[in-house]
Image (tube, rainbow, N blue to C red):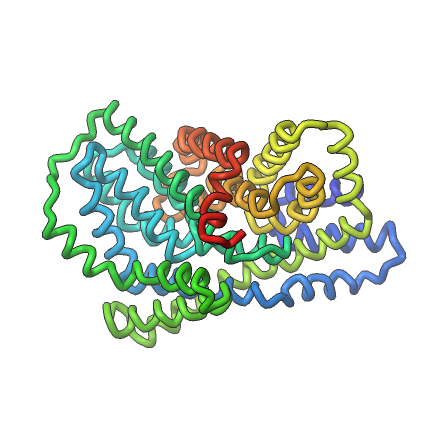
Length: 425
């Protein structure tokens, strides 16, 4: 395993793309230290993608990009502002709330940065908010999309762990809301401290007007969650319906895109889908290699012999996930570490759904954790802010996210209460 670990670290230090790191590391290890034909890596890469639930990923991405460029995101923002802008720091609160709403209809954290940030960042700066706070707020708040269903991470974990994606969707509702409320709490304290007060007042006519305009966009989570909970659709079918619904609304209701623009959106969605899928495939090949080398069993035995308490094991799992999230994207972390942690969870009596939400919340934190949080690179490119400045700006939000990680980890009902209440357990 030293050869495998050394090759992974060495290739990452050379700034080689992550999917190439996984692929080359597996090839080097198999070619040098085993008699297994190296073409098995390609076969395992393909088999890692040959799973029906993963068909939901391109559908959700297409829905997210259609909504971002089809006028839905701006209407969601207007509705969010009408609800919270009269409060102290209303614009900052509206940013977090808009990220929560858009996350509930997109499932994509980078798409949320682009869709919400492109509108809210100029508005925040124009209103006198510090640019560092503004970009940190957007970069971190957008990560809630990794938790609030429909989340692409839930689909990946459900596929790898062979658990119900529908149950994961329902289990992510309360942690996702808690995650967003924690950022709203920090934003409120920050705005009160720096006297960012609002001169707005509530206008019920404005709330009704913006709600009517946003109601078509807000219909997406109703279709997804209602369809799955009602037993009408599987998560994969719900993703396809959501994509078709988003396209029809953008084309014929809001009329903010035409067929030419839809083609451009489809191309962009396909490019993002390809990036995610190649990571899933190559990470699956690496995970398979770890499995045949009995690494999960050895890790399980070592950890259970070393750490006897459930609390200590959960802390160790979180520590590993936090460190891994600093360098790897959540998809890769899930595909590689879920097979390692599932046997440990079974030994310690940890519910697989609970473990999945723990991994998802850590994955959300990793999306904006330096040095390689993907949201940071998206925000840096979008807003022209250096990664170094972004790294310092997100520190307070990292602390708030860590609080949520601990709450979700050590209070299982946060994740498991709603599925049980809906008789899904």
